[in-house]
Amino acid sequence: MVPLLLVLLLILILAGAGFALKALWWIAIIVLVLWLIGFVVRPTSSGGRRGRWYRW
Image: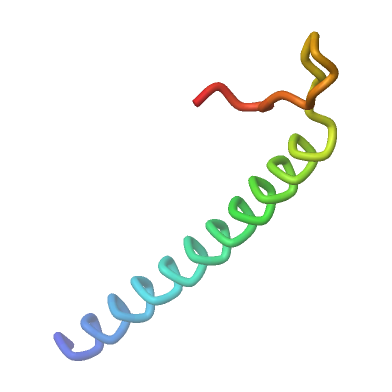
């Protein structure tokens, strides 16, 4: 009984980790796309130069 519970627990942990990693990949892709869009459409400053679109 205990080995069966350990195997089921291991399966649940691995399935949860796989879902979390897949979700993190999607979040990373969305952030990359937003960063690229911000890099392309950054505003121009008063001197005509393109400014930074982020604050840091």
